[in-house]
Length: 531
Image (tube, rainbow, N blue to C red; front, side, top):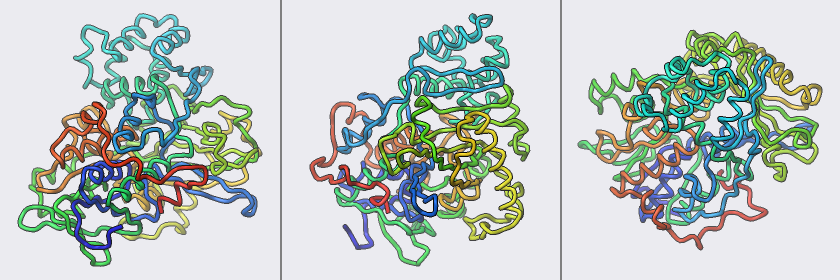
């Protein structure tokens, strides 16, 4: 471990984008320091733990890792892990291939199966009168339609119109849009096609929970001359005579490096950490005009019943209406949606053998829904926790939070009657909570909204106009999600080193010395390893 203040590279933030960047830089010879303001590394992949029944039972909840696609041997995530010596270190548990997602609408339940052919067959069985439109839509998604390339950057709603699909069919095809947080009128066709294809290749959950990613990447970083430091809040990116040269901490301490990577919130990176004086007015306007994704309200439940014995290994998307577009529009207008759209997932069903998640005979369950980001919705919040405002005990905040919790729990009980009367502990997290721990603008966990005007070339690349300053994370051109930010981490490290690292890994290259790694094993605790 290095205790000096001079490094080859500094990474701000320990989300998976930052940790992946640091792992690839360290294994390529750059001593890299990762600085994290929270007391646990991992960003949205971290977990937290709570005790129920007067402290007698312990439960673990994922903040952001709920399921991942394309984790077979040649999948993107295993490939990225293999490149830094982590081949086989994380086990991926496949969810029910006959229905890894279960979409529940009034009078209609649709189970999303593995494989394009089965998905197509099941959609046609559900909507036999719309077979032609369904074939047309999926042909575009799979790139099989003659005009498929003309659709990639057009809104999904326009493709639905072109295919003549009913509102019911649109809702089912777009029912997993909460995974990227944009309505059909804004989401590019290629985004929805990519999401579906990603999961149709197989949906998985990492054994041991989301924290295993951070735990193993930290091991790579520290085993290759780098370090990850928690409770380390960066106050300023230092710029001298043009280039970035390091960072100044909240404590006043400075760390120096010719490479600075920000995995922090995009807007805070430029307007707060860097300072508007270092960017052009045009760049400042572009950054200011960017829209952030809608944030998420989360409810966490501990149950005194084991649902892994009763339910398939699936996630539930529960809707009280087929009007998914309307739910998003309510949020854009600053209102809680009139109709419910809930994502319900149970880590203890996906991974029943890891007792840290839930004791034998119990269940760890999470409920999520998108909500507006406006502070005014949450009572008397004025500036937000990133500005130092205390909010936990404000009466209006707690009252509204409790009311929304009750609504979401009641909705989950409609979807899963088995949970009624079995709740022994509950807690909720608002967008304000998200801002507290990740300092994200608007409390979003998805970064910039992914929409037709903010997708692909319209998003920031890893390089910036400041020499030595690079970007990683959900707001870059690589997008959000586990695959997006990890792929972006490799892309960022590639930009720093001026090499295509992913191409090298695909060709069989492994960076670093895998035999030097120590993480893993039956007694290894990834949460403790990430503190």
